[in-house]
Image (cartoon, rainbow, N blue to C red):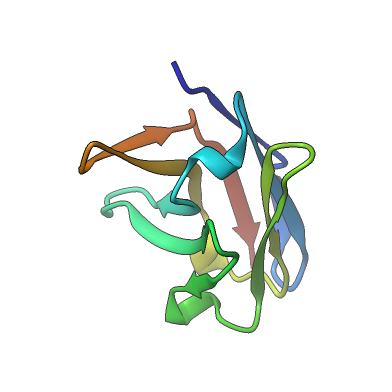
Length: 119
């Protein structure tokens, strides 16, 4: 069973920075893509950033230029550097890994880490 463990959440003031890390229980090369999602109270979970197996990245518009996703294949981790944080970035952040086996997609989620940005 794939396990994803997030860390690095916390509380910061607007304009501050946080770095989230997601540690996978197996080689991240086994996944087609990994990414970060977030869910604010009363809202649906939304994509924040993804990184594919070829290293290509994708970001939701609201975080472009402020957040950066990266991976460390030696440590099997995927990080999210968050700069210039805004109160609207407050949410529980989840790591997700996607794998396709025999044509079927499988998604694995971490337990989430809280990010709170105060104004």
